[in-house]
Structure formats: structure tokens, C-alpha cells
Length: 514
Ligand code: ADP
Ligand code: MG
Image (cartoon, rainbow, N blue to C red):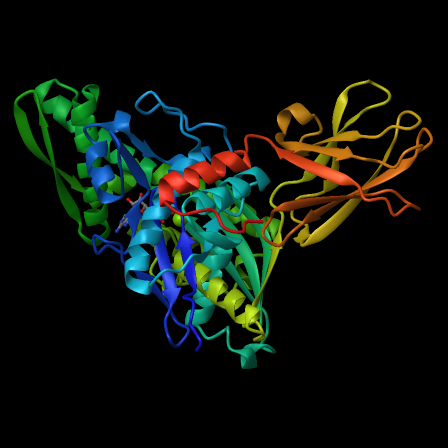
């Protein structure tokens, strides 16, 4: 009897998350949540003992924001979420786990008890944040079979929609695509080459503080200013009114994507108004935000060594690309009709499901439908001492934009005779000063063979896996000594905590987890 495991991919977004699977024909389809929606707000309401994820948490956000965790993805890789909730400091990956758990439970009700899933992350996510995302999946009762970059996932979904994933397409000329992803809280651009069934990242950049939320805020300001002119009172000064207004504006922003004007109710100090905003007014008030995306997009294209005429396609993903102003700008700058063949807020989840399908097929001995070649988005280095100045320095081992997987080796010398251990500090970042880089962790090399003379070489191999995760291996030249390395991650939750959270959040017993 052959039991088929569904190929599941999850887009764990800053503001919205989506889950997709492959149907019987290998086509990606979005799986709706328990509320019947195609995406789930990435918000978690801590209501006493009850933890509520999604739409209900979003509703509560307007009036009880102190009990709602939103935007936890922005804090991934930090030790704790920036806001205290009910007196507790949650690690951001725990909040992510609550979201993923809802996605899993809702999908299992339709697909049966799967656990394997691919989760996506922004291309710029560093090692620490990728690990945190993987841990979030684990605590949600999932087995994370891969972590892939969101733009890559989007490109795979578009590739599928256009038939690039058929093996007979292999010899076709390479296709260059620019993925413009404007979501709720972040903006990302990636230039990729699709060569037959190979997906190769050429350059990637973005703005982690720019997204649909900023457009919402501008609309709130427009309405508030109008209200002040009418009633000399600012609705933004009262948190509850401001929260409600924000929800109304987010809604009106969507209306403005399909209609020329929207009316926004605003009720404050006994004055109830419906304030009408025209699309043009909204576009003028947010023009500078759009310009910032244009600038980054143009720079990234340049970094990839391309010009608009050499680019084959512009793909739009992220819910905010539904705004007509985005499409018009991209059309004007690129001279191309932007591709919107896959739903903006579902493309990433679809690509993740395709990737999951590929991994599951491979485990059954089938040839891969496509390959992904990734680059590392941050330089990886080791902290060393500058002999001349005596200052700490970041010795870069793997520069950014290196195709991965890649292995780099660094030889360390023991400082004294019979030294048995070495401590290696690992950082990510471009700066020569380690203080301006992100610490990834410390690697302790133990049980060096006894009796090594002073200044004996010890080789440390840093291996970047295709998913952007780091593995460290150590060897001592001319010996076959078994050496232990212990990689302690910065801000990572220890295994016992992960297991404890996993039991609490998903009710599942821990299984094999590497
Ligand atoms: P994430 O950043 O979580 O990946 P999404 O890609 O799902 O988010 O995009 C969410 C953003 O898209 C939100 O800011 C939302 O307001 C915006 N959005 C969704 N639909 C529309 C629309 N029709 N018009 C304008 N903005 C939209
Ligand atoms: Mg997104």
C-alpha cells in the first residue's frame, strides 16, 4: 500500500501567512484555513490561557493591542519579541510557532496528518534567523524539510505556471527575471536566472522597514488631518480609535486598488464622519514610498550586471503589488508588462509546495523537476585578532553573493603545547569590525589530540548548505583524531526548551530532529 504524503509549503509572512500543497497532477493549490480564507493574518492573541491566531487576533488588535503579537517575523533571530505580553517575554520563534501550528492544524483537517513541510524566508535572512524559523516549525509540530528563499519560491511558481519546469524545456535559452516583492512589512528585490530547470540567484536586496503598513499609515494620516480640519480633534491620539482607524484604512487601501475612491468611517469624540479619499490623493501621499522601491529595484538590477532591455520578465509578488501605482511604476521603468500570472499573495506558498514535492519525489528515487542554486546574502567571517593593532577583526571567509553550497576552510594554530580546545567566534556581516556584524555563535573545538606542539594547525571547515544553514567541521592535518565541535548559537533556544514548547504548542511528542 502506498500512502501519499502531501507536499506542503508554507509562506510564513510578516503580516499574512499562506499554505499550499500539490494536487494529484502536481499543481500547487492554496489550502484555505479553518475560517475559509486563503491567507491567515500573522497575529497571535494571548487571551488568558487561550492562544488565538489569525483573523480573530487581527480584530482584537485594534482594541487590545497589548495582548496581540504582530510582526514577530521582524524580530526573528532576537532573543525575545520586542513587546511584553501579559507580563511575558516570548521568543519570536515561539510566536511564529503558534502561527505555523494553526496553519498545520487547519490544513491537517483537510489533508490528513502530514508533518513534513517547506517554509520560506526572505532572501536577506541571515543564518540565525533561518535557524529560528526552522525552530518555529519544529515547535509547531512540523518536520521542516527545507527552508527556501521567498523570491526563489515565487520564481518557481511562475516557472511552473509558464511551463519552465518541464524537462523538455531544459535546453531553452536562459530567462532572467526580477522578483519585486512588496508585502505588508518588507520590500524585497531579487534578480534570478532561470536556466532550463535551474533557478540561480544573481543579486538580492531590499528594505526591511518598508511595506503595505507604511501605505496604511499614510492613509491614516490623510484621514486624521481631514478629521482635524473638521472637528479640531486628532483621532490618532486615542489608542483605541487609532487602532480602529488603522483597520478601516487597511481595508480602504484595498478598495482603492480596484476603485477610484473609498469612504473611511472615523468616529471620535462624538463626531462620526465618513471621509472620502480619492485614489489619486492616496497615490500622491505615498509617492515617496514607491520611489524608494524603484530605487532599490534599479540598484539590484545593476548589481546583477543587467539592464532593463536584458531582463526578460518582472514578477510581482506580495499583497501590496495589487496597488495600481506599483504596476504602473514597474511598467514605466522596465518597459515591460509585469507578470501577475500567479496570485500575488499565494505565489510564495505555491513555490514552497513545489519544492516540497520535489524533495518528496527525490526521496522516492525520482529525478528532480528543477534545481535551486542560491547565494548567501551576508558574508561569513571568523573573529580574529589583528596582530598589529591588537584589535578584533572580522576575517571574511565566504563573501556575500557566493553560490551555495560552499565550503571554506580556515587554519587556526594552537597557541601553546598540548592545547586541547579552541574557541572560534563566527559572525555574519560586511563590516571589518566584528561589533558591527551579527554574531552567529561560538564554536568550541574540543578533544584535540594530546601532545600537539605549539602552533599546530587545526583546520576548520565552514559549510553553507543550500538552505543557508551553517555546518562546522574540524580536522587536524596528519591525524585522524575525532574532534568534537559544539556550535552554540547566539539567541538560539536550547533543545529542552524547543521540546517543551513543542509539547505545549502542538501537543506533539518530539520525534527525530536533526
Ligand atoms: P507579507 O508581508 O506578510 O508577506 P503579503 O504579501 O500577504 O504579506 O502582503 C500583505 C500586504 O498586502 C498588506 O499590507 C495588505 O494590506 C496588502 N494588500 C493585500 N491586498 C491588497 C490590495 N488589494 N490592495 C492593496 N494592498 C493589498
Ligand atoms: Mg511575503
